Image (tube, rainbow, N blue to C red; front, side, top):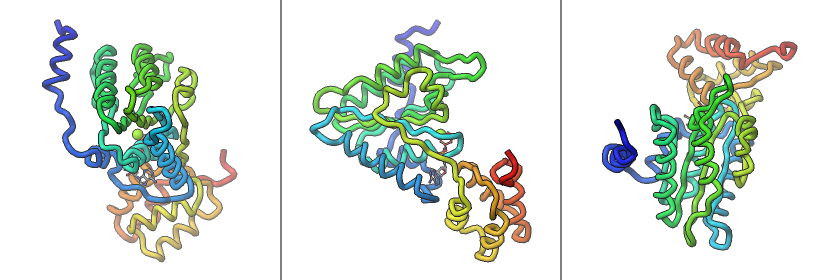
Length: 272
Ligand code: ATP
Ligand code: MG
């Protein structure tokens, strides 16, 4: 039988804290840097900086919470981590479903609660809550989710830190609609949308930055995607570029185009 005190003991002694500076912790989530593929990237980072500034300001409330939402693979986690990095808040904690695999609802709530309690002790704290719907065990069939965890998060998202303390919470989700139905959206100071890449120039910016293709190949790709509908998340695109990188030079361009088509990222405008 595992009791609550066993759990608290484990939390205190067995679960290793993530050592390192705030920057070290956050860098893991920006594994491949941030490529400025288009205006949406600039806007999200600019807005993120403004809200981080607001969190820091002494004359405002001590709490700012930002939701970064967008389709799967659009780069939400990396942008959230970059915003947290840019905020330069010295205390950073990450609350992610990966670290709570196999936790009971109660353990999850306690663990989330502890992250916030730790944050309240520092003057300037930033918490990254990654993939909220997974944290809530949301499943589209049913649909079902952990109401206990939802209530815990809602309380924490609305709770002002103690006087003099400042808290910036950056959350990510690819299920804006679901959070809306759970009445969670209104708990955030602001919601920032991360779109997929949708223009040839977006695609070309990433291909250029990757330095995998020659200028002649880039021209060939420009020609091949001309007039097509483009729709792909940055994470997916980077994976396809990696695949092309491993491919024989003579086949690189055709491999990339074929993969984009297979993934539905490249379509004739006539197709739905
Ligand atoms: P998931 O839906 O699986 O949670 P995600 O939307 O959170 O995915 P990330 O895990 O953030 O996507 O992956 C984005 C990857 O792309 C990261 O490795 C990041 O370093 C890289 N990247 C490069 N440029 C950008 C950019 N402009 N915005 C976001 N990520 C970028
Ligand atoms: Mg993510």
